[in-house]
Image (cartoon, rainbow, N blue to C red; front, top):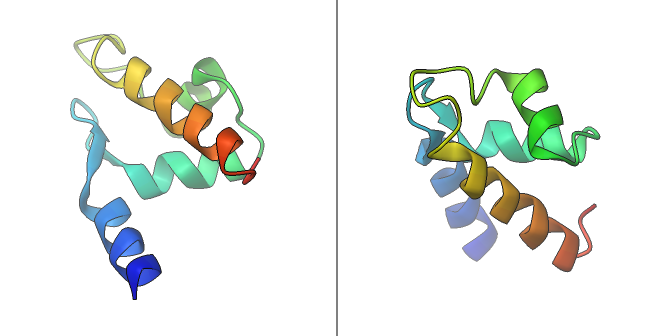
Length: 73
């Protein structure tokens, strides 16, 4: 049940507010090989809004680190 809730929350939680990019989209890019903030930005368009990644960059880095610690990447 927790996995389902996490999946739903990933879909509705926006990591990049400027471009309205969800945590699910960010995680998918990471699983597909984008293991740096710059590669995630290139893959999904995050970091290209008005804030130029100042808000989402640290969040994306945190997601990458969490996924590494969990052994997902």
